[in-house]
Amino acid sequence: MTDTHDASSGFTKRHAVPIIALSSLMISCNGLFLRSIDTATPWQVIFSRQISFSLAVLMVLAFQKRSGFFKLFRQSGWLGLIGGISLSMANASLILSISYTTVANTLFILSVCPLITAVFGRIFLKEKIETMTIVAILVSMAGIAMMLWEGFFQGFLFGNIVAIVCALCFSMFVIFLRMGKDRDMMPSSVIGGFLAAFIGLAGSGVDYLGPSRDFAICFIWGAGVICLVHFLFVYGSRHLPGAEIMLITLIEFTLGPTWVWLVFDEKPGPMILLGGSVVLGSVFIRSLFLMRRRRIYDAFEKK
Image 1 (cartoon, rainbow, N blue to C red):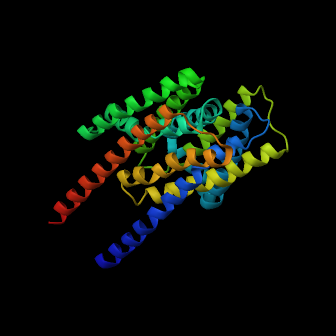
Image 2: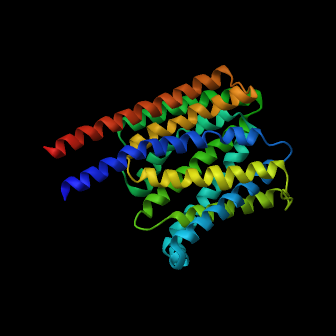
Image 3: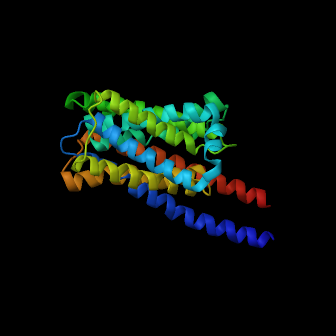
């Protein structure tokens, strides 16, 4: 019985790594999709992308749960609702940030989400913060300060600040997910998607996109890529420790700026690259530290 379980567990973990890596690779194309938009405003993009995503996830859940579909939403409770609110603000601010600054700026700032989550975990869940995490936070703050400084002179300050808001909101969403680990929190993603769509619709003055090339891009982006990424990440993250997930998802933050650099010649400035390298480096080293500590702990437990 034990051997069978271990083999199954090993099989699951072995496949979780490429699943998380694939989801990170796909989500790294966010900048490419947004830069491919011709005439639509950021608010129209928010509405079209999020309504497409929400309807797609809703259809998948309805097919999966069938008779238990409405019960799923009731069980998510208030955590599902406020988690959805946090996610809606994160989704809307992501599009706004990339629209008003470079993709590199946005993604480098968003890479501090694991560190912000650690701080929120201490505040709301009374979790301990390791010394290494504190050091990583301080180093990352220096890196972000470099990016904000250059952004101020290049006219990207608003987009950079919105990226910080996005990181705060997404980190808070993760905290709500952890608070609701005893229930299925997938409804919060649907709620967040529809609320973000409402934000986009209100921001556009109810001037939504009709059938067009831009809407087709948003539809493929939301109902196809983001929806698939969502389910891949949810599945893969169940079978990997947080430190390994953080390490793998750095793919998004390094490849995202690279794609728009290669396709649209969007070159980040020297201070952006330096600050981004500082942030990514601090998150990378912290992830390695946490992985090493976990392996030592697991080895000790086996003895």
